Image 1 (spheres, rainbow, N blue to C red):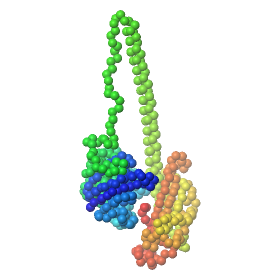
Image 2 (cartoon, rainbow, N blue to C red):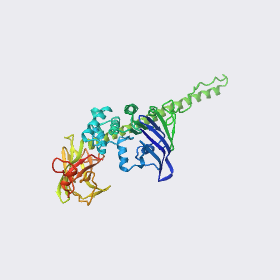
Image 3 (cartoon, rainbow, N blue to C red):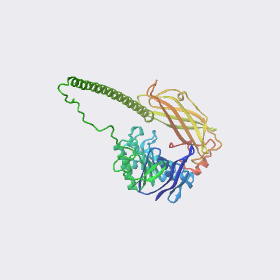
Image 4 (tube, helix red, strand yellow):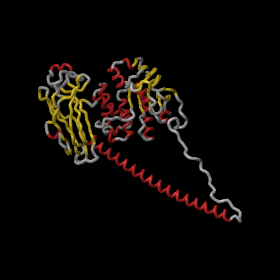
Length: 468
């Protein structure tokens, strides 16, 4: 099986004369490893987006299994992206409120390629395969950068793609972790015979590939890598002239030329003193610069640690979701959301909690009228356990999108400020969650619903669905 590109061109309307990609041709076979190198802005990521059917080319074709991708419908393109291509982007982009296994299983659930139980089992197998069996139920905020990248690779493999596209997958990792991730990707493509295309800056990554191509101002051309790991994009320079040996001893003068000899001796003594003073000043300045640099690094590190702790508090210790939806009749409903401090004990303070509701009408989201039922929805709360919020809303659209037959597709967006202190200063974290449900319409005919959907008893008022 081959993924082929012929004459790919990408121009942007803001500058029609500038070609981000200029006539790229490429054939990638199953099991082949191709590396694409090039300077920033040379068009590498744009090319990868066109190969993965994420960006439509201005000219040219992308052909997979004999079919031009961009002749397919949007539904067919979505199916191609979810089942035939695995994406590993530059940054992990994991959902912080889902554990590792749920993050991996999510593409299979959205594509409808597996049941929930099968997707979960497949996710656990893949996490074991990438060495994260013991971290399957950890949240992204509890994992290192390398561990998060392994989750992304497992997620890219959940639908058994034929090609993996990786856009600088190791750019933010240290050298040892980078080597582990590249080794993992290379091993997977060999074992599964998956075509692998990696965009990279690091030539050590590119050297593992079967073929290396370079992007130069939009042009894709073959290239040979230098024998050294450095070159093309990074060079080792030597600054300053070579060291020279200085003879500071004055030349011998005639014994009868006393004034000249005295002048020479005084000059060298003065020069030696000047050099000593200059060296001392230099050391003082260097010490001051070093101290200032260390202090700035220490402050930056403390700020990062503080932000990481705040993010863990707001996204991992504090869980939230839809608890219940009641049908009040005549298109009126009552929504109950919950926030749960899973750590217990020490309170988490939540402020400015607000919720909006939307129903999907055709391809658009239409906002619904929603009001808090009790005062807790608008107050500042110290959450030590589980706290619920109730809202009333109306949903009576004349028509609506039916992702699930005879059910409305509804989204609730919750926004809040989270802090470990009741009177925060610089320790506020803004959290926003989206919850999706299928909601039974106010005028639904239960017999009609049961002809297309099977339930144990009457059709439920609402059905939760994964975030998307």
